[in-house]
Figure 1 (cartoon, rainbow, N blue to C red):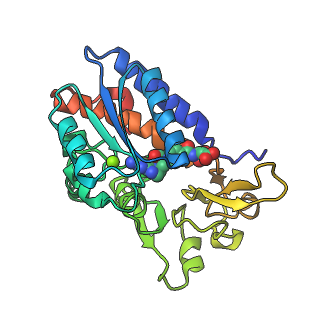
Figure 2 (cartoon, rainbow, N blue to C red):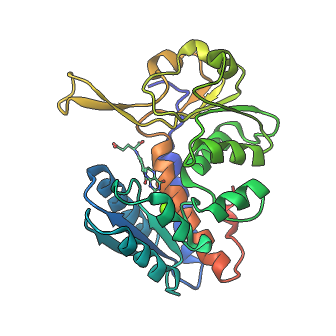
Length: 295
Ligand SMILES: Nc1nc2c(c(=O)[nH]1)N[C@@H](CN(C=O)c1ccc(C(=O)N[C@@H](CCC(=O)O)C(=O)O)cc1)CN2
Ligand SMILES: [Mg+2]
C-alpha cells in the first residue's frame, strides 16, 4: 500500500456519520424516495446501498420499483406523485433508464427543491449562477476529496477531463466555486497530456480505462479519478476487475495523492446523496444547513 492514497471509503464513512449526527439533531426525519426502473444488476446494487445507508443515517427511505417495460408516462406519474407528497424531501431516479424512456424528460419532472441528484435544469442553472441549490453528488464528492487532501483549493489549477452532464461540467463549476482556476478538457482538446501536466488537481471523468499515464501528471499533483471501468482480467475468479481512467500503477509514484478505483470517488457519490437529502429537507422547511455538513 502506498502512503499517498486518498481513502474514499474512509472519507465517505465519515461524511455518512456526519449526516447521521445532523439528522439526530433535527426535529424532523428526512425522507428519500428512490425510483428504480428495470433490472440492471449494477443499478440494483447501487440502490440497495443507497437505501441501506439512508436508513443507517437515521432517515426514511421509500422505494418505487417499476418493471423494465413500464411506460415513460408511468415513470413521470410516479415522479409527479412524489413531487407533491409533503413527506418526501428527496427524489432520486436511478440511471440509466431503459432505452425506451427519455431520461431527460423524466429528470425534468423532478421538483428542483427535491432534486437530490442535482440533475434538473433548475439545479444546473442555480450552480451556474452561484445560487444556493442541490449540487450533483459525484462532483461534490470530488471536491470533498480534494479539500480533504489539499485544504483550501483557492488558486489551484484544476483540470477536469470530460464534459458530461453528470460529472464533467458540474465538476468544473464546483471547483470554480472553490476559487480554482479551471480547465475543462475533453476528447477534442489539443495536447491533452500537456494540458493535464499543468494541473495541481486532475479529475479524469471520461470512462476510458487506464487512459491517464504517469507523464500526464505533474509531480505531486492531486489525482481524483472518477472513472469506474470494468475490464477483462483472466487472473480473477470473476474474469473482470474495476479500473479507473488513470493507469494507477503508473501514476502512483508521480502523484502527490491519488484516489484508487474501487474505493475512491464511488463511495463518495452515495455519501453526498445522503448529505443532499438533509440539505433538501432543511431548505424545504426554512431551516439552516447543519454546520457539520458545510463543504
Ligand atoms: N441517479 C443517479 N444515477 C447514477 C448515478 C448517480 O449519481 N445518480 N451515478 C452512477 C451510479 N452510482 C450511483 O448511483 C454509483 C456508482 C458507483 C458507486 C461505487 O461506490 N462504486 C464502487 C465500486 C462498486 C463495484 O464494485 O462495482 C467504488 O468505486 O468503490 C456508487 C454509486 C450512475 N447512475
Ligand atoms: Mg435523478
